Length: 187
Image 1 (cartoon, rainbow, N blue to C red):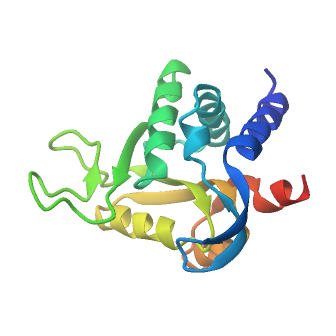
Image 2: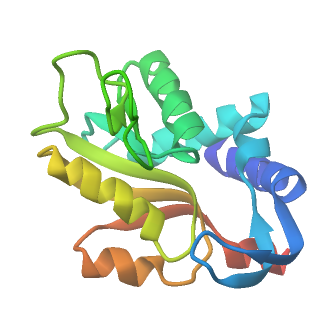
């Protein structure tokens, strides 16, 4: 399937499985009359594959070492991308950032790295399912930067177009999205 055909098919899956109308309160605290819940798309076999393929295509030339982000939205995305990057012969390892470190065991804030490995000096992309203001992704950025990693990009599947571009711009971070909310609102 061509990239444009994959993008069109994924758009339909997101529209059908993950986009809705109705008043909701977003993670940012804002009210909205539409929402995206990408979990049904990210956990659908075809949706997960298309998200991973399109994300891989968007990132393959960025010379990344790791992809990850804040739990829960980033976990299925990062895992699917790690798998497809291996299949395509250009592995990008995955991790995720806990909203708060575990209070038992190793008490880690960043999960997925083997014992003794860190993100220090690594090129990292922060990934997110849906981005509104960018606050959640910035929590992941801050945690990853504290390890000494270089955050080279924030990539979201759907940008709600409600301030994230400004948030990341102010932090000196490039920001890209696979889709914009306006695409779904017009459809």
